[in-house]
Length: 302
Image (cartoon, rainbow, N blue to C red; front, side, top):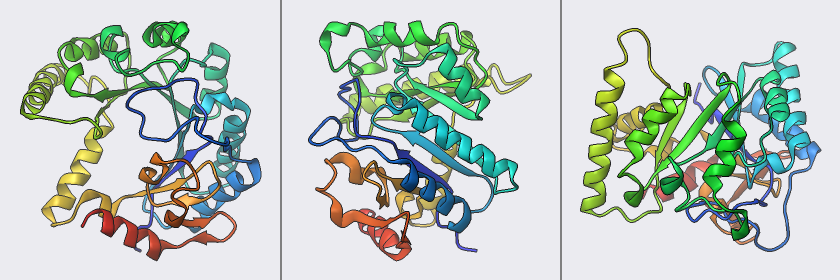
């Protein structure tokens, strides 16, 4: 069996209550786009029933800010849970959120529906607030708003997503340690591909990972201190490079945009919907053009 995709990224809308400087998706520009339930349900069923992939599949809900539309998110999560209960293929559900709209009640409903909630928080306030900002400056510190929402939540089913940038590494190791000491068992770490990494920045990044390695290794005698999902992608990248291919040529993702169309990767969503219409590779009702998807990925790696 040739794997097509093991992850479906679902972009529920192109609206967000924040205006983060590093966001890789075009948001709050032009007419609003939001997925309707029927094409979303059809896309979930297509992914579960007709997309080839070994092992467990993953559906990742993103945006825009997905918690702007909690009932749509919960409806989708409930559908996945029903499919699992009816003997459908194994599937994990995740939502990536800025956390500013997360409540204890909503977190409980998502967790009960089997959804892992990952909150974007790029360190402490001095690191996080350089890039993560409210669309309305009068709202104040994004860090304080998010931390106030998640401080008292149970840690089971709750993780953090941290983006690494050249000017945000000075205090980040201590901040990641603090997150671990607060009980978080999943802390993802992603290098910001949109930043300009000069030699000084790369040196700081190397020192950060060296310090993280020492901290992590010193705490693995009894158990893994916390999961770092990015490491699995790093292994995939290394294997692809060893085979002479760029990692994105063997990308395991399929993207459903808020316009109801499939795309090969989220890079197509860096411009407002309609400006990358030639990069659409199908729709839930008609299926996916896998040949067009692979051609796109190979052009990206050229």
